[in-house]
Image 1: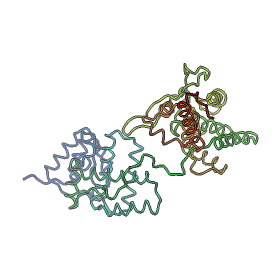
Image 2: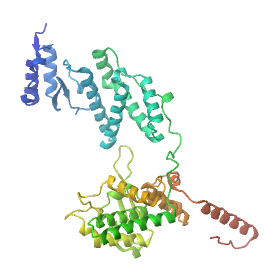
Image 3: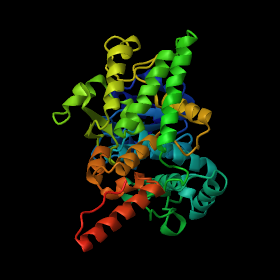
Image 4: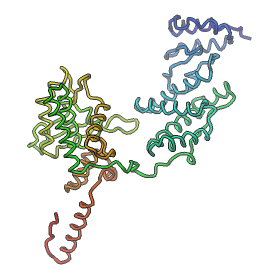
Amino acid sequence: MGRNLHVPELMAAVIRQSGVPETQVSGRADYLKLSVVTWSAAAKVASDAKKPHRMRLRSGGIVADSRGPAPGAARLHLVDVPLLRPEEQVFEAMLDGWRNQQLARNLALSTIEKRVGRLRAFFVHAGAYPWEWAPQHADEWFGDLRAVRGCAHSTMRSYQDALRSFCAYVSDPVYDWPAACGQRFGTHPIQIVHEWNSAAHVQDNEGRPQKRAFTIDELQEFFDYADDQVTRARDRGRKGWLPAFRDAVLFKVAYGYGLRRNETRMLDVTDTGRNPHGPEFGDYGLVHVRYGKAKKGSPPKRRSVATVWRWTAEVLQEWVTEFRPHLAAPGSAALWPSERGERIGLQRINSRFAAYRDALGLDAGLDFHGLRRSYVTHLIEAGRDPLFVQFQCGHEHASTTSLYTCVSSDFRTRTVRRALDETLAAALGQPARRSR
């Protein structure tokens, strides 16, 4: 029968093996004297401390950072030592393990943190720990999101996906959480998001009906207003005229190349180049997008976008050669430098765009992404090859490009008229009449 070892002695052995400074455990002696473990358990912990992962203390218990082949397993996050606040500590260890599991799947850190934030929001709403959750908790939360907060359909699904993913993780026997919870709390977590209480993704386009493309007149009015703000600020002697000029060019470039918001923001000066098939554009015949929209678990997708309109190359060249050097810090490669940092932030882009739109009294559905919708729509209406437009936007499928197309009724009428004229001319053996 193994002799008993008090926890302070166990902790000293663990600390010596793991290299954790003893100062990290000061002030915990009163609690440690209350617990007793067997020598075999001490040997197990001391042996585990020799493994290549850090050991740290958290509210009286020991939590190990997972660095082994099974990220997220309970045994790698909870050592078999009595915990001071077991419910809180086990829940935090579950979140740590879930983070590691998602990191192992190559998900972006921003995606993981958003999911963790949504999971914590559900935890606060339910007022219970994961091993106490039931489908009724999920139903109440989803009802609150839809009826009270008015979440969009896609946002609703993202909350449900986060909760479903976490429940699948903690209820999987591979990660040992059911056994750990059963031993400590007499119950275990279950999956609470099912087909009958979650939304199905049955439609490709789930955007709000208010989201649309700019008309040509609206777009011209928007760009003119942005240019006017530069003139007004400069005439008044205000130093904000240069950032206003930067933002005006940024909006034009985003539309001129059909770029997403972050794709535009992350452009560098070196991301422009010549197009051998468009020498009239000079050094701005192509824009190399290096931070395109990534697939889940993959790095950003790259593509090259050809310059279509001459004015796009002209405004870009003017900004790079004449005005950007006055705003950019020495050594900065960002195409859109900030007054306070190396690169303009997404929040600044959003706020400036919304301010201009609201000042003109345009629809609230016209957002920054509306510039990309406008790019697709105007190219299609101008008669450009749909396959060319698809490649310019970086879409793998033509059906995705079609979601961005918001052609006018006049364009549809002209298209039908042209098709009827061509059919009639072919039947009569006459040359087709071109309809404008």
